[in-house]
Image 1 (cartoon, helix red, strand yellow):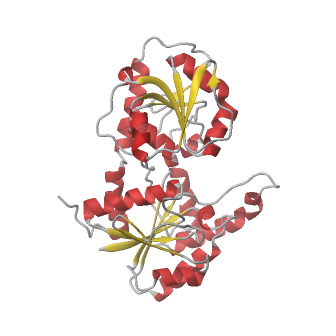
Image 2 (tube, one colour):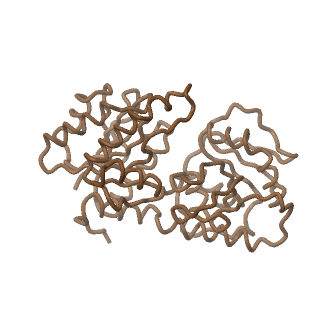
Image 3 (cartoon, one colour):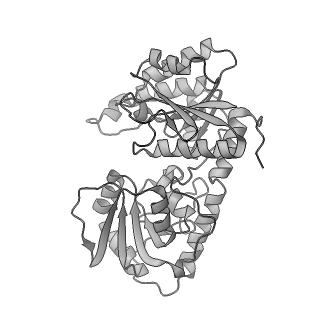
Length: 366
């Protein structure tokens, strides 16, 4: 059986959503013999027409007609990975929503499942485009939620928003925290056996924000855990990085998923500066958890969200602490985070997608 996955981009473009969809496609094929045809929604994307076993077609322009040509005479089950800014510069992909509405009307037995990786922007500053376009983005998300046969998302906040936008057509929306795009080791060494290394990982903008907003907290974490090296993983930030409080910063540049996995597996801690209420949709947090690292946050979110609890699944820095001599607590946090991750790892998510996309009509191989 085949399905179509619609994504903004795939490798070689650096795009976490594309990596997510490709990893999911691999798992669906390996576990259920369910083959993906990819439809690319970015006309500027360049790449091969096939990755491994998966055929790839791209729109030649962002238009309803171009989308319909990709969906014609293809599998009638479509899994859309939705984030507005992935399909339109200002986050309003009218062409995509109108194209899917026409496809649904004209395709018997069609099945549209939408994974909302984001819903709409909520800019509060009047000089930003998100402030002025938030209403249109919300309207498009509502149309898409009502159009879809099934909706899924990565965190509970989004699920509640989608229920309202769909006017209760979508209820009990499954929330699937994202999985690691850089591997899932079967076994992870304890923190005591790892290099005293702190990792900052992610896009240049995310790492820039961490350095600019949380330099004090990074320094504090290094002092607290006896860190001897800071590894900066990803495309260059264009910041002049050399050291923090005498601790050298090593910029690795872009690395393969396997190379990143090897580094994370032998690193003590991973630092992140992310909106904690949306932590379940962070691929960086997922990667740290999957590799059994101690995840470190500069701040705390007081509510329990998506099963993630501060002080249990990530370390919250506190001015009251200047050093640690007993690492039992930090190991407990790393272990809890690893255990939490296993409840929604890639294999579990593939099963969930089959259940919600196809209604258990596929049997797991082996």
